[in-house]
Amino acid sequence: MELSFYLVQLLNAVQYGFLLFLVASGLTLLFGIMGIINLAHGSFYMLGSYLAYWLTGVTGNLWLGILLGLPITLMVGYLVERFAISFLYKRDHLYQVLLTFALILIFNELQQILWGSDVHSVAIPSLLAGSFQLTENQSYPVYRLFISAACIAIACGMYWVIQKTRLGMTIRAGASNREMVQALGINVNRLFAFVFSLGVALAGFAGMLAAPVDSVYPGMGENVLIISFVVVVIGGTGSIKGAFVGAMLIGLVSTFGKVLVPEMASVMVYALMAVILLWRPQGLFGRAA
Amino acid sequence: MSTLTRSLPLLAALLALVLFPLFGSSFYVGLVTRIIIIAIFAMSLDLLIGYTGLVSFGHAAFFGIGGYALAIAFQDASVIHLWQALPLSLFAAALAALVVGWVSIRTSGIYFIMITLALSQMFFYYFFESPRYGGDDGIFLFLKPVLMVGSEDILNLDHENNFYYFALSCLVLGYLFLVMILQAPFGKVIKAIKVNEHRVRALGYSTNGYKLVSFVIAGTLAGLAGFLEGAHTGYINPAYMSWHESGVCIAIVILGGVGTLYGPIVGAFIIVLLQNFLPEFTEHWQLLLGGIVIAVVLFLPRGATSLLPRIRSLIRMEKSISLSQEEKAKGDADG
Image (cartoon, rainbow over all chains, first blue to last red; front, side, top):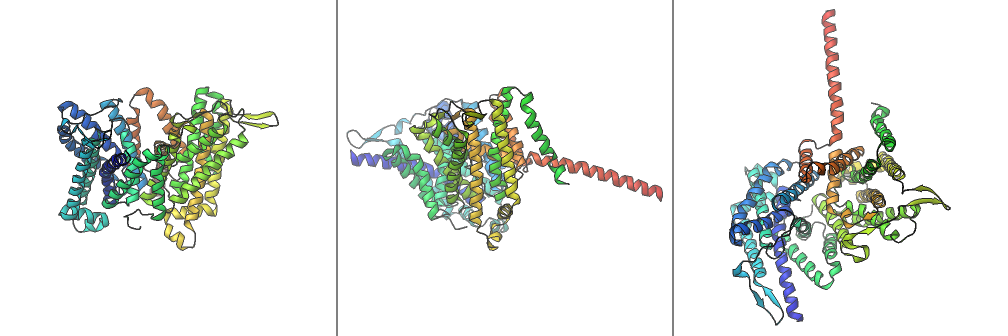
């Protein structure tokens, strides 16, 4: 049992890490490029999960649900950026924290109004419902592997967009010197609106993917949000690579922590962050201020 | 404006608070006690946000630790001595603030916000998951602290009015203490750090030391508020130190007026009253609360108390306009 047990835990850790990466990469882009601290990011994860639950119920198919849900998250992201976030670019972080905190209150209440306070679950699509038999009593669900695969695909896509395309070049330039990009005649407002919507869609997509393995419940975004902050801090703000390494580290520590020292598992994640910050205050891949 | 006229509204407000229990029913005395406690909590955060320039998003941790220290040490006691319980809570909160501050003040900006948030979550989860301290059910306290000399109790907090006046004295003393340290050289240095830390360091000050002292003072005051809250409600649970509380506390500081000390007291009145009375109108009151907070961020970033001088200057401007018109009219008549 020993080896296969650890293998299952390792797979779980990686899958959890990937989901965290989707949420945290959006967060870290917002920090790095727009200088925005967005507490409402967890709400978009929750929105994704609830959309998956609702649209799967309506259409009877998770794939259709995700397909219909993604444009909705993009639109929500665009509207939130235009009507709230865009007023805060020149303001102190303090006001960004406060405004996005208020957004959480509003999103939580909207979720109560639209979907009530029950816990819901989403069925795993029949195509991926099976599981791999590792040993006689250890198996691993196919759907969890699919989550990892989908996240790898997204990560590769993001890498390609950011490293190889003109848009990605603008994003990278924006992350290293916002004023210069503006001075060179790039429409920063449009870039910011795009990056924000993209971040929202990534968080929403993570929520949709996670809906069938975790249940869908009120306040689910907030746990994800805080852990994603930890990931961003560990990796260094603005660094996608850092977000990836941070997400994997947190995935491993929290999954194995839960198995080996259950009563200290949540504390360990934060202790890890504290240790890393004592060593490198700007995070693993962050630039020194 | 002389100091007297400037502090006149404050003295009037204090007088109103002192007289309040003579008129208010016990429900309202309890409610205002809670407001006073939250005001102490928010005022302590204002020392960090408004004066030192440290946006702490984990301030509720020290509030919770103040409460937990009381509950853990005295949950089975037959009598809670105030002179033992209060210093213990303050010490526990100060110690926690020292550790959290030591780790976090070496960072700044977004990092500082997130580190304080994450470290306070660490405390939250520790109490949330520890069965020894009641887990998420928390701890009940069936007694109120008393101050005894010999066998005679000279202050029994079991009476609502006694508790009210005790909390009010804590608020007033806390306020005066903060005013005092802000006028002292220490206060000048931390205010300078908020404006330009590099320059203060260049002048030869060890800025991290000043920031840490400020952090510990704020944490200790938050612990005082947590002690009062735990003693007042007789119940302490991990939700006290959740990041939600930290967020609401920032909202109170901004709503009232950041960097004023009396602003957070006004903010505490507004938010706690809203929290109490909005649910009577609608089930979805958080929607309204969120909307109010957003409106404040967008349209009133200096908080509610910034309206007062604005109104005052408007009145003065009108006066001076009418005066100058009178003079002009006089001059015309003379000419």
